[in-house]
Length: 109
Image (cartoon, rainbow, N blue to C red; front, side, top):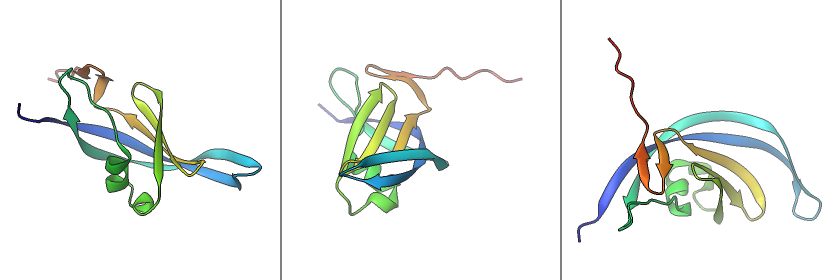
């Protein structure tokens, strides 16, 4: 069976974080955001899942760090380096990733 891919668009938001692993981290707010396109593999069930490798490709600051992803809801992920939350990723091109459903585009005249 041939691999299927889908292009998705993600809003990437960076956290303003202070703290340490012993006392914990405080998130003071969101610093900035941008959008990125990520090509995702579709599995046999028609679902996709974001991987740390894909995040490292679009967020260059995380390229050489150990990234762990936590899915907070179906379309939102938090990227952690060790135990520190650094980046939130929100899928803006689809309404569902399991199974894959694109957002409806409004016809503009």
